[in-house]
Amino acid sequence: MSDPQETQPAPGRPAEHRMRALGLTSATGLVAGSVIGTGVFTMPAVLAGAGTSSLLVLGVVAAGAALLAVLFGQLTKRVPNSDGGLYAYARHEFGDFAGYLVGWCYWVSAWAGNAAIVSSWVLYVEALLGIDNPTVWANLGIALAGLWIPAAVNLIGVKQMAWFQNVTVALKFLPLLFVGVIGWFFVSRANFGAFNASGGSLYSAIGIAAGVALFSFIGVEVAAVTAKRVREPGRNVGRASLLGTGASAVLYLVVSAAVMGLVPHDVLAGSGTPFVPAFEAILPDAAWAGKLVAALAVVSGIGALNGWTLVTTEVSRAAAADGLFPRAFAWTDRKDTAWFGIVLAALLPSLLMVWRYTSGTGLTVFTFLVNLAVVTVAIPYLFSACAQLTHLVSRRRRVNGWLLARDLVITAATVLFSLWVTFAAGYAAVYEAMLVLLAGLILHAVLKGRATATRGQAAPAEDDQWPRAA
Image 1 (cartoon, rainbow, N blue to C red):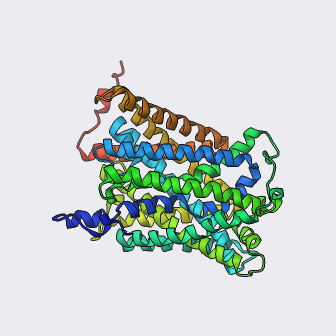
Image 2 (cartoon, rainbow, N blue to C red):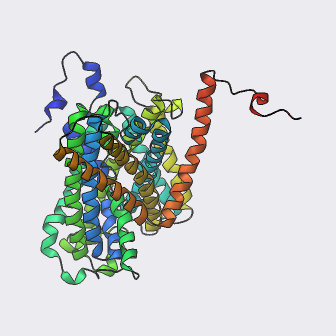
Image 3 (cartoon, rainbow, N blue to C red):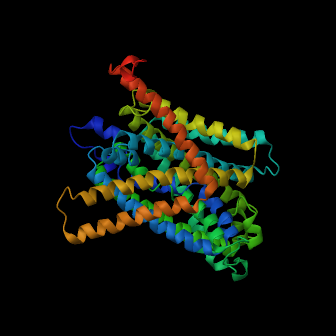
């Protein structure tokens, strides 16, 4: 059934209707499509390295993601101008500097996440094409195609992007549903690994699972980030976030457990394309099974990259419109498409892939990029939760005891969840994220200085700043 919001524009507001091209169905598809990328097709292999304890970690992360979805819905209703989502929440509550830091960290996380998605996507393209020993240049060429095709779709316009997103979301659910339903009839208990298969402490196993689990749920906030493109955002952002996250969480848990039971543990832990042997276990006599799942994973990845290209563009556009990012990010064409942001959303991960493919391949590249994206997105999550906490504690509006208690519990849980995610990602990931954040401070200093000069606020003369020599 079609979404009535998508077929019947509000009378007298055709321009706004064209700009707000995402109704509830498309916004939910954008969330689900951004959450479920090719990461889910690689995740069981990483989880297997931690053991079956990773399924419990995945469940905890799913609950945390659902609470974040509720939080973003509440914030979108409350913040008058929520364009840019997490960036807008922090700026509204804490001012321009906090808004800039959140916008910068989230923007970096978005395009670094695109690089992580495409590094997994490359593995399935190679499985589809039968490339067993790819060269660095083959890997790089496939990765660049995966980044620039979605950029071209976004440059055509948001309406076409939404259509493309809905189609790819539908296609990506097919192999997941097949494994998550039919696969359970072929599961063998002997295939499951130990509760802790990390070779170290349980803490080490949790750390391995937590990074990829959170990365797989990054995207819960995309309806909030693209609120400018969503019709009736006060109502639809929260609903789309929760619906998309809930559907993704159920699929992740059911499918990851099924794959662990379909593929022997030692094979699964070393596989970059775990769904290929999973399909072959269900359909052992069908030579085409592995190719089919690889093809569907390729489509899934393109859909996720398509949605994340829009998200990366919108958060930078919102910050640029407020003067906190370079003005070029707000340049638009006649379709109101922020073309400069789209080009950079493809160019920067392209450069990152060039760098990483000269130093590693396969799951090594994927794991590094996952950790970078996880920590840089945990910072905006924490700021968003703190923005809501500030609002609740300040008691700016009268709220009855039950609703206030409910909102405080949700907010406190998301604060703790964001801190735990940062801690669980490990020292190396936090170190890399800190370097990224400090680099952002340099850009902020330049933009702040230029803005001050533009307003004509000249600095005091040197003689006014320092005492004269005796």
